[in-house]
Image (cartoon, rainbow, N blue to C red; front, side, top):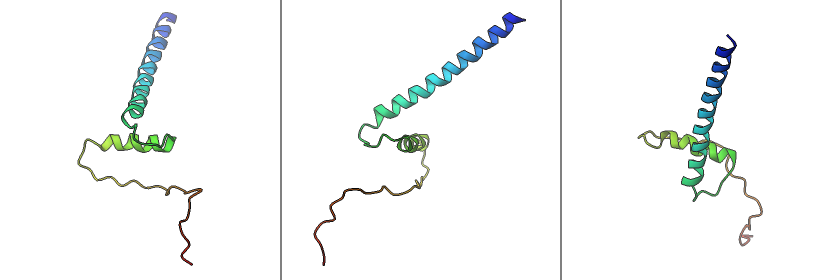
Length: 80
């Protein structure tokens, strides 16, 4: 009985390792394929992952989110 439990534990660990391997390969793929994109945040990676899921289809995709907050921007010449 103990041998079967150990075998099951090994099998579970093997499956977990395979899932983690797939996840890491996808993360590396995102980093390599999207070098022209400046954002490296978790939110940006999530958007890229979601976009890749539908990229091979003819589906129309609408991305919703808060607009980027601009900081330290020169306002240009005064109009007053």
